[in-house]
Length: 111
Length: 116
Image (cartoon, rainbow over the protein chains, first blue to last red):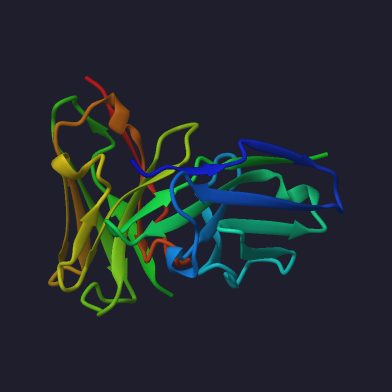
């Protein structure tokens, strides 16, 4: 069974920079994994933030950036704001057997 | 602006079949090279990708659901459908349809409870 792991929780202070990571239990993330990131706040549906490694949705602030670092997908928040406190889920595509798998999510606390 | 709207029963009995519809506006489910997806999220848990279908009927399913699942499209109605057989309480979740799972085009979600 394909599993994607993320840090369960992270805590950061406003203004700091934090990087969330996303990795499959087997293999490495490549551009063909089409990594994507979603933000979810309580009571709201998941909101797409980043797709195809580093492309921002129209509403995604510039302080959010996506990348691939040493075989893992990464979401970096530069200059964290209190409104960024949320759950963040990554999503990876696996070419065999052509399925998408969400990560378990990272709860980001800003205080 | 592409819009998607899920519809179906909010309550299903255990062992019954869950059937959901995703109605698409301002786009065509017959568009080539587009995959229409279903995603669900149980309360307090992360999202789970369920499966997808394209206009040429290329379908792929989450392996954990494959034996109970069918995803199809109806071009005449411009709809996507999901059928999940032999449901249990573990299938209780909010179900979303999405035009391309990483796209901004998601439905609002439909809450489904499996209970007798």
